[in-house]
Picture 1: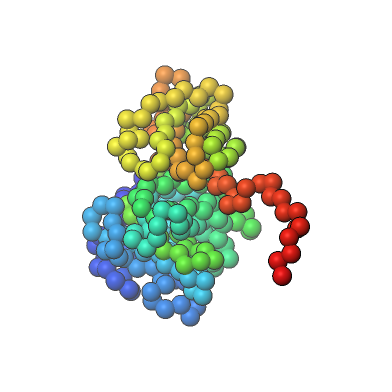
Picture 2 (picture 1 turned 60 degrees about the vertical axis):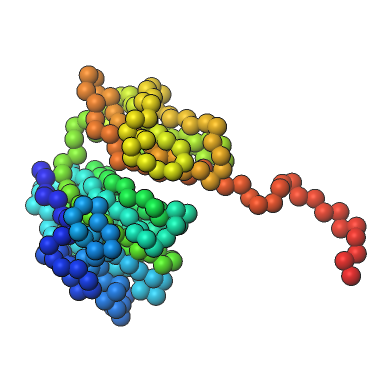
Length: 277
């Protein structure tokens, strides 16, 4: 199964524009048009436009719902898309995008959240969300609609572009979860996909050219350890599965950031022996 790439290039731009057959809105009924998703030329990964989803704490929940996906089980699919915050935020600020499955576009309570993506300033990355763990909504009904939602307790702007749905491959890149995060060390657990894995990574500023030529590390025990780091440092990681003599595609670039030390030096000691008055 594969649905063509939605590039958002053919619907005009500006408030009120939207892709054909998409449903757009905001969870807050009084939201103005600036907080209802629309096609924008402020960012594009390819072509001339993207879909802008903006929200604030007052107008929280800008959403875009795809057309119905014609497949017997959405759990066989994945969605891939590029996303950016455009010029709105710095590299230390992350916008958030919820990707959910919906059984009825007229009933937003039928939403089942699948993943929440963090998108940092200064980056234009591809993201992938798989629906293989989706088991239906609370009524055991299986959804065929995917909903993108800008929802956060702060100002939140996300642009998405080049959205494509396709079947999850038999040999698929592993999923990754963070096991250890200290100011100087990351341990990432790779699971699913093949029986063994490979990984490559870069530290610091993102560059696709740099990660493309980064050394490839064999991962036999499922854990990727990255040592000798500094606090609050970004690591960009790509992983793939080894399936016998075959390899999966490389995953999209994944970002992890090391823990930041507290400003005060610990332990802190004050004998309270001096009178401040």
